[in-house]
Amino acid sequence: MIRLIKHASGIMLGLLFSSTASAQVTGTLERISVFGPSLAGNLLDQPDAPEVSVYLPPGYAANPDQRYPVVYVLHGYNGSDDSWFGNESRMKANLTADKVMGEGTSEEMILVMPNCNNLFNGCMYVNSAATGYWEDYIADDLVGYIDSHYRTIPDRRARGLAGHSMGGYGVMLIGMRRPDVFSALYAMSSCCLNEYAPQGGERALAMEQIKTMDDLDRGALRTFAVTAAWSPNPDKPPFYLDLPTRDGEVVPEYAGRFAANSPQAMLPSHVGSLLKMTAITMEVGEQDGLITANRTLSDTMTRYGLAHDFLTYEGDHGNRIAERFGTHALPFFSKHLRRH
Image 1 (tube, rainbow, N blue to C red):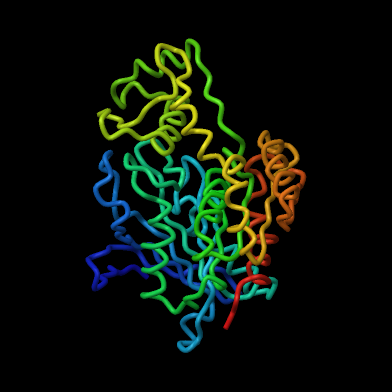
Image 2: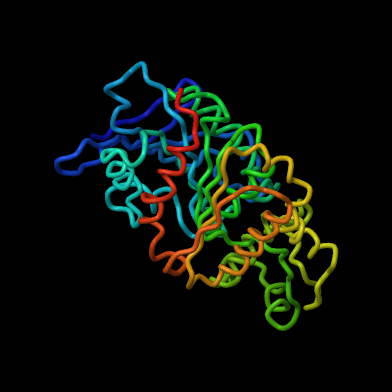
């Protein structure tokens, strides 16, 4: 079933279609666009009404008086909500939710994923004048919209954050900064956790010569994505950012901006925020190149007395994410989010 979705706060077009799976009750998936004042006027003119996938559990339509907890799910770099949700998606997260909720291994909940793929293939979920104030968009604009348009439990104790890779980074970052909004965190194979130490040299010098989008290769896109997020500069068109080097040499001031945005560096000043969480889990594959950084952050959390689970499993950065989302992440939120 396909229809236009029109809301009082503005016209937001989307697709509504029912998940299909034989011999089991299914949820409903909506893909809408949600405007956010936090994204409006960003310097790179990226969308201020990104696409958002909203999964409504199997019982949502049949139980009009029932309210549900919500898990906000953050995708990884070069991904999108569309790569996670939908019958034709790679992750098929809605079908996974159908299965575990239908089998009773997870209680029913609403799942929400915004699309933060942008000019550089990823927003890093941080507040940036260049690409938009994404932390505020998720914690304020999107949560406010979902609470006002769906039957949620509008309480931080009924909201969780989950994410993979860049999304796992977003989970830790937003979790530290917005404990007033979220109460449970599940970070999967998180990137960018340790203090980022930019390098100088020929590659850095080549980055400085990039003047147009046509000059950006895949490696440069990643660098420009984190730089636009962590080191924006309104006075430097067309990219509006300060690369961490000048003439191939690291600029300490700019490099410091990178370090300041790493959860490892942020943690000592955000212990109080994380202590407010009902539960925190970090997980990573044994063959994932990011395992050391994830373990280091876990060790730091332990030293600061932050209760959490650190899980490892046989797998690399992405080969078991869909499976783990169903067998571990959703049951985790089923256990730790308020249901009434």
